[in-house]
Structures are given as C-alpha cells and as structure tokens.
Amino acid sequence: MRIKLPALLLLTLVLGGCATSLRGTGDLGLIIERADGSVLIVESSNRQKLGRIEGLGDLSHASVVYSRDERYAYVFGRDGGLTKVDMLRRRIAARVMQSGNSIGGAISQNGRLVAVANYQPGGVKVFDADTLELLADIPAAYGDGKFSKVIGLEDSTDNRFAFSLYDAGEIWTADLSDPRRPVIQKFRDIGRLPYDALISEDGRHYIAGLFGEDGLVLLDMWHPEQGARRILDHYGRGEQALPVYKMPHLEGWALSQDHAYLPAVGRHELLIVNRHDWKEAGRIALYGQPVFAMVRPDGRQVWVNFAHPHNDTVQVIDTVTHKVIATLKPGKAVLHMEFTPRGEHIWLSIRDEDRVDVYDTTTLQRIGSMPALKPSGIFFTARAHRIGL
Amino acid sequence: MLKYSLPLLFGTLLLAGTAPLQASAEVTATRQKELLHLLRHDCGSCHGMTLKGGLGPALLPDALAGKPAATLEATVLYGRAGTPMPPWRGLLSEEEVAWLVAILKQGVPDAH
Image (cartoon, rainbow over all chains, first blue to last red; front, top):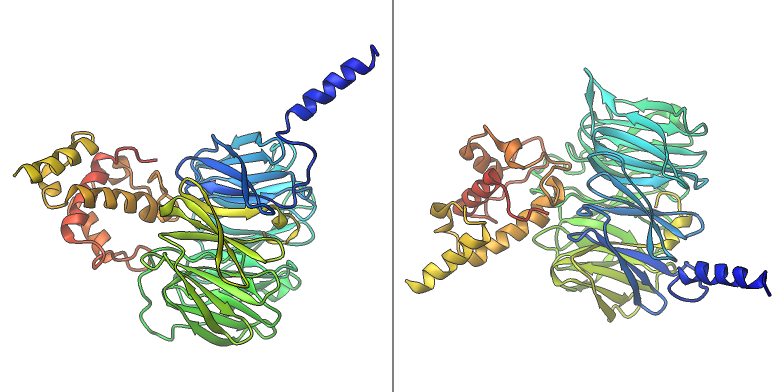
C-alpha cells in the first residue's frame, strides 16, 4: 500500500493534466483566431470545440504542421513566434521567438526537424522538433549582400526542404541529413517574385507561383540536375491582369489523378494543368480571383474561395466534368477551408461573422457551425502524414 | 447639426482624440470604422495586421516618416507597378485614402 499510494497519486497528477479520459488525436484540429493570438482545439467527429489556447502572439498570418504522432502542433506566427502546442493537454508545450517576421514552415520527413521561412531577417531556420533548439540558420543571401524574404517552404523526401526567395527570384533546396550542416543547392533566375509554392504529395514536384510574370516554375526533386523550368508560361498572353487584393495560396494544392488545379494570379480563373506533361489542359471561369483551390481528399471536387471583394463566396468544381457545380454564400470573408481526413465534410472559416461553418460535401448543405473569434486557418491533424502539409 | 457633430465626436474619440478633423469631416464615423477594419484585415494580409510589414513593407509612422502624404495617397490609389500593391481607386474614394494615409502617418490606434 505504501508503494501504491504515491504511484497512484503520480498517475492521477499525470492524467489530471488531460482534460478528459484517454483518447486519440486523429480527429483533432486547430483553428487560428487571427486577431486575438489564440487557437481553438476542435474535434471533427462530433464537431465540437475542446478548448482555447491564448498567448501565441501575432497570428494575422499563421500556419500549422503536426508531429508524426499527431499530438503536437507547430504554429508559425506572423511575428516570428514558433509555438509547440500539446493537443491533448491543451496548452503550450514550448515557444520561441525565432525571427521578426515569418510566413510559415514545414516539418521534415522523419519528424525530427521543424523549419521556418522568414521575411525578417530573410532566410530559413531549422529547429529540433522536440526541444525547439535552433540547429541550422540559412540566411537567404543574394546579389550584393542583400537578404530575400523566403516563401513557399515545403518538405520533401530524403530530409530535404525546398523554398523560394521572393526578392531574389531563386529556388533553393536544403538537404538536412546532417541538421547542423545543411547542404544547399540554388536555382537562380527562375522568374520574378515567386510568391508561394507547393509540393506534390509524393514530394517530387515543387511548383512556385510567380507574381511578377504569368507562369509557374517547376522543380523535379527527383531530377534536380534538370534544373527549374517554366510551366504555363505567359498564361495571360499579354492581357492586363486585374489588380490582386489578396495573394493566392498554393499550399494544399488541388491535385487529382490527372490534373492539377492552380489559381491564376489576377484572373477569375482556375488553370487546369496536365500532370503528365505539365501543359495547360484548360481553364475554369470563376466568380472572382481564387485564393485557395483545395481538392477533396478523394480528388472528386475542388473547393475555391476568393479575394476581396468576392470573399463571401465559395465555388465547388467537379473534377470529372470541370464544371462549377455549386456557388455557395457562406458569409462575409471566407478565409480558409479544410476537409475532414476522408473528405465527407469541409470546415470554412468566416472571419467577419466570427464563426466556422461545416458543410457536407455530398449534399453541399451546411450541417453545423461554431463561434470563433476572427477565424482564419483551419488545420486538422491528418496533415501529419502528408508530405508538403 | 447635432446629427453630424455626434458621429464626428465619436470618430474623434475612436481615433484617440488626434484624428485629422479636416479629413474625417468627409468620412463618416461608420465608414471610418469600416476603413480601419479594411486596413487591419485586408491591407494587413500583405502589410501585417499590426502593420509591421509582411510581403509588403511596414506601414508604421516611423516607416512612413519623410514620405509626403500625396505620394502615399497616390500609391494607395494607383498601386505600384512591378509590385503586388494593387490600385484601390474604385474601391476607395480620394477622401477615404487621404483619411487612411493621415491615420497611418500618426499611428493607427489599437493596431493589433
């Protein structure tokens, strides 16, 4: 009895930290509350809010990656804050201010490294996923001692990361097999103002969108010796692009079996790209300028949201017919969309109405809603097992 | 008269008592609130919600010091060629842009 009591007490203390009894994390997620620097922990099976965590700094632009055990979230904040959130204990496990201004990050294939893309000072920093200890600092130096903002940081296979230099117009890859000695390969003169990038689920095709010209850049991570090449060059064909009131996002890219669906910059269009030869396979006319184009996990639908002043609308595209099958009006300022792991539902953040709505992707009807303060990104833990998310 | 002076008073309080009254006389209190929301959330998507900068440059008073208001107003109205900065003409009036620039130069209250 004397031995059992302290052991029991210890067990009680350990479990007391958890808000509920034993549970998994595969149906959990985070919702960013951008104006308050807080995140909601949610559960998608019963569509409920489990808790709110505050004190994550400036989350006006924020993104999340997950540890491979789906227990920890790494939240990248605008102010350079990197916060490790314990999804079970619902509290901050670790936090570092790693730069003055950052845009996002990625987690390595083996789950040991978390890398962050920074605007100020421009570059990439790599941290130990357990302790958030800084392991590598990769300044994005170019030209005559200048430093570029870094965007589109993506994880690939073989413990490599790829990222783009916005000001320099370069793509770099970093091999972090030895985390303290990154091996960098640079691809120069790729085009003007790469603004975001994505990588295919097999970690092979890294694609950067260009803001400064019509076109995208493709780097085959299986064949880096072939260099970065231009695809969909001059898709605007000299037409004047419309002013862009919100930059499109490429991550979470829409990829079906045969096609990729990419937002056209400054156009009310989605570009359809043939995945086999990377040539344009068509366009889909849309209600406004697309921001996110996200494919349902089975590849059958693409959901698109739009830039100001069309951001009250979401359109759904059938990937077989390439037709818009629904135009929904969820509410004012739909900022982000996230499918449940197998895609039966989609969650939409509606910033200006302070709520997150859930739609059934078969009936296209709203089936639920929950209040959230100026919600932006929604990130479910299923991202943990997907390359590039 | 009372109907006009009340919103003005409200606008003045909202702007920490140092609002440029000449400009705000042409922008109603309701519209001022909308403009501050736009500044925070839409301009903020590139310049940062706290205006410390993002893909676009910082818009804090220090960063704007020495830049003439007319230049800044033209940038907002007509955009900057070769950069992602779009023209806001058509969505915002000249008076509204002048009001926003004045607010930016003196510092946006509660810019977070």
